[in-house]
Length: 183
Image 1: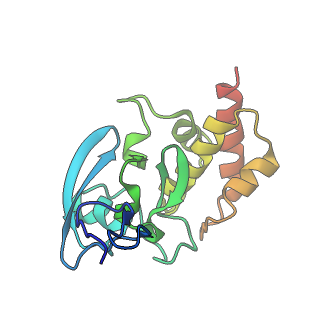
Image 2: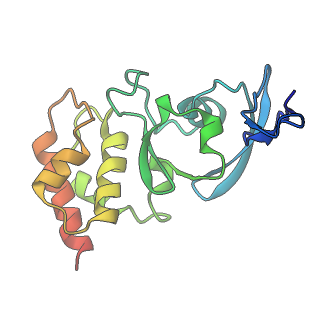
């Protein structure tokens, strides 16, 4: 029988067979340590808790929105180690050991991220519901590719749903931010 450890998600060797076996966490809550917006936090969660639930309901970071709760609208987009991730489809346990950045952590103090500033300057939001997720995806694009093209921006937001239809302004804002970042 494989040894179980409720505080780890690593494989362990079965003492009898020497074969690696996956560990099972739970039932019940487990203590989870996360790095969110540069701050270490600890929460007690059921292993099936999603990252968006932890962010919004346990940590009060409500900038990350829940639209469809199925990973289809991308309103819940955050960064995990600088890469975009839909937090409604990510188990909180899977974020262990990663740097989580939410819309609240994107600015540098009072100084907005260039994409946030460009969204304001180019009126790239209407109702604002999709805006945090859009900003996170566009900011990741600009961070990784400051010489991005319109096609790159369209690809970056292709999984996002903006019911207000502000896509043209989102494209302009992102390209403007990239132009400023590429100096």
